Image (cartoon, rainbow, N blue to C red; front, top):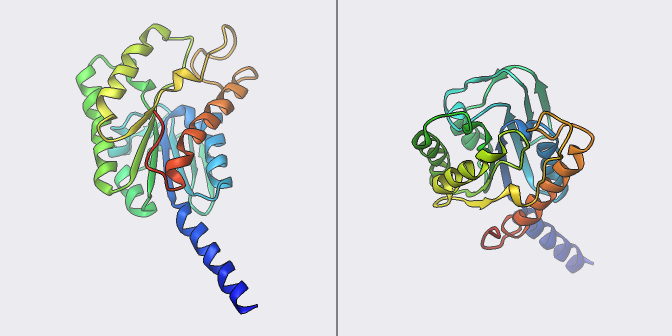
Length: 222
């Protein structure tokens, strides 16, 4: 009986130790259904998960605390949720210190589309990616998904994202698993009837891509 209890405790300790802690940050897509679903999947898999999303954000906002005018979604390690329309973007360095993640997931890139400087975009994303690497956490970067609005500019954003972060992070190309509907929505976000299942499938695809490294593998699948 005693050996059975000890064996059970040993297995429990191994499961707990392998779960790890995830910090997930993103822009408006993570404020919405994509972010909700990925957060749900990570927690259901036993990952200690802290999610922070700020609509309209680029990496710089996470260094300066620039307020979002269009929405935020926070859910801390304890599962406490905060939502609102306006509020400061969390400071990324402080989140790293507070959460102490083994894995960091970043969903970001779409909001560089309207910035004229490619050099700024690369430098900005690279700074966040390098900070993650310096922290010792594994970094996984999720690109912008497909969109109807600004569709022709997607290759540029993907190129800038890969150039900025591929030296520090594994990169998931979201455009390979998303196809924005021809009608409905605002042309960018997936907050509408036809868009919701696409956002959920996108989150599931990212989760499957992440599963091996989060559970102790050597890295995400490109």
